[in-house]
Structure formats: C-alpha cells, structure tokens
Amino acid sequence: MRTSIKHLTVTLVLGLAFATMATSALGQKRGRHRLLAICGNPQITCKTSVTFKPYDLPFRIPERAVIYEPEPFYAIVLKSVPAKDDDCNAFVSETDRLAAQALWPDHKVFTDRCYDIENLFYTNVNSTHRFMGVYAGKTLAEAKRFFATVKASGKFPGANLRRMRTAFNGT
Image (tube, rainbow, N blue to C red):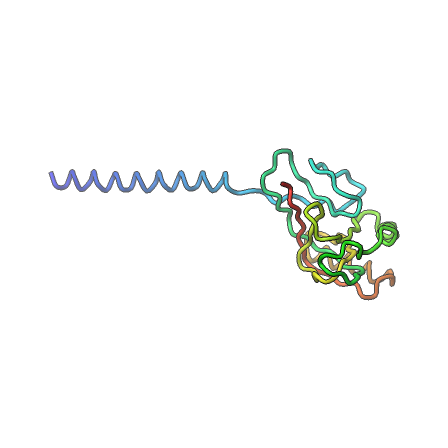
C-alpha cells in the first residue's frame, strides 16, 4: 500500500510539474513580441499603421500593436547642433536633411527633434544636441560598408557610426 501511495504521489508531482512547464512555455510564446522592422530605404513603401513625419526614421507598426519596440539598427550621425531639452527651436534644418537625402536616396536621412510625446526619440545620442543621421543598416558589417561611402563623400568630416534604437509613445 505504501508503494502505491508513493507511486501515486510521484505521478501526481511529475504530472503537475509537466503541466506547469507546458503552461509556462505557452505563456512565454504568447508573451514574446517580435521586434518591429525599421524602414531604412525611403524608396520602398513602409507598411505601417502610423503616419511618420518626413524627418522621422519610420518602422513597421502593425494594426493593434501593443508594444512598439523596433529592432536596433546602425546609423551614421552626420551633423549635430547644441540644444537644451526644452528648446524645440534647435534642430538640423529640413533643407539640410533633404540635401543629405539626395546624396543617398536608398538610405533614410532622419533628424532628431524636440523631446515631445509626439516625436520619435533615439537612444545612444547626446541629450544636449539634436542630430541628423542616416540609416546605415541592421548589421555592423553593412554599416561599416556604408560608413566608408559617407566618408568618401567628404561632406560630413565629423560623421560617426553608432548603434541605436528609436521609439515613440503611441498612447
């Protein structure tokens, strides 16, 4: 009798453990979210449910998305201007952005603007400056190849390469 109770107890414990692990695995699958793709080539339509401003680096946001987390990317900071956090009048001009965009029509040139809920924000940049950047790719190898092209243009001698993220508050 003791052996039967022991077997029954072990069977119940193992069954409960497997049920817990299966439920946990299912929960993890549902809890994960894919990183949203950056739309780095302005010549290709960005399929997104959000309207981005011309100076933004857009990314794909599906309808009914709950978590807006774009994939990390590499960018080349071409130019920056000093700005205080609350100074919304300091930024690289749209004229400068469009001139840079004309140099690389297949790499999105974007600018950082005022820290405001309606604007995108970018990581790995100096908060006391606003910048103009150009999308350089998903991988470091791709970014380094494009960085060589930017340097060869001679137009942005202080340009630098960095890994970034972007996001906005969609609420």
